[in-house]
Amino acid sequence: MGEYIRGVVVKLHLTLEQEILFKQNYGCTRKTRNELLNKYKAKYGDSNKIPTKNELNQFLNE
Image 1 (cartoon, rainbow, N blue to C red):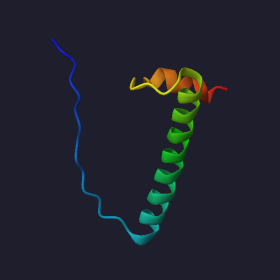
Image 2: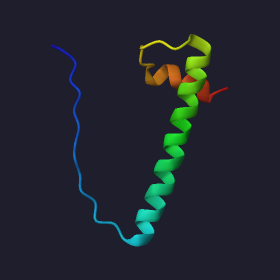
Image 3: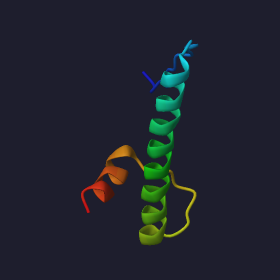
């Protein structure tokens, strides 16, 4: 059998406070991922290869 990518679409009804906290958390997550991708590209060069989760996690330990 092949590998499947599955996803779920969920509509959230947030309060104003929850919306602010959600945006702050998402912003931190996005910044961290971008920093990890920059470190990956600096080490391995600009290739079209998409790094795996394990490869990016190695940079978190540094």
